[in-house]
Image (cartoon, rainbow, N blue to C red; front, side):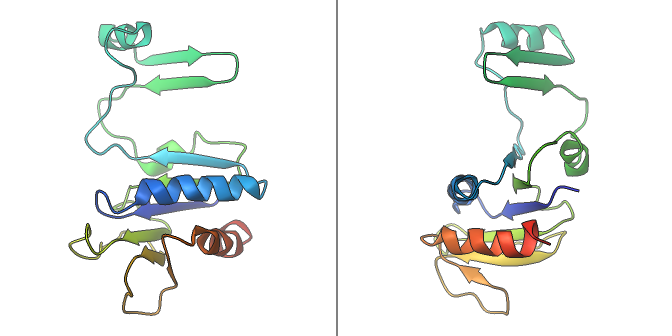
Length: 162
């Protein structure tokens, strides 16, 4: 089973910045990484007017865009898929980093910034660590937003290598 960890936090707390940094750092260590982003309010697969947008607007259940070095499959559903359903589609990677899905079970790292986080997040999974710009009470490992290499070391040791 591919190891998975979700980064959770309030809007503008820095989740995407942490995700991008971790992807770069783990790739530099020769790990294959998949990234999953939870778009809680929905999203459009392509800008209006593009061919693939027109296919979706016409009612296609699946739209595939294929190019020389990439393939994108958009699937449309009547109800939101669980994280487990999404993860079942991912293959050939060493780790899956997830942004969001705070209510889904599984290991999580909270991104907390004093200016943007009104409170700590209650999770449905096991909180492994915190990335924050201020000290946080408790026994969890805390990592700085400026030292994501330390967080990457933690992920390699406690998630990928276990």
